[in-house]
Image (cartoon, rainbow, N blue to C red):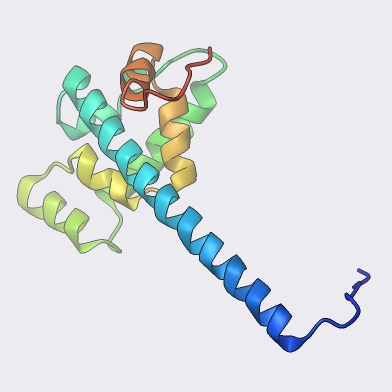
Length: 144
């Protein structure tokens, strides 16, 4: 990789650029985090409104957009959800739910998932659930 430097660039110029980059990153991260939290909440709310709060609901393949094309992805998602609900010991709040209630609620479980896993969860939901979730983001257009 070739580095091209500006003539007469001072350390202060580089530092100002660094500060700008840092501020921009913090601003973008702040709003991405808020969106991520909102999506987690909406997925849990809409899924449980339709299928109930029992752990078995999110571990049932038929509660997703179960097509031949999606079958492997749904199986993988359910494997991840099952591990998080039944075996994960990294999150005390999940262990507590499992031990005390013998049921890890979806809104509790979604906090253990990565943003990529949440995105996959949304993608695998039936259209009616995706539509309900997307209505909470009025400026975003739905695409089929």
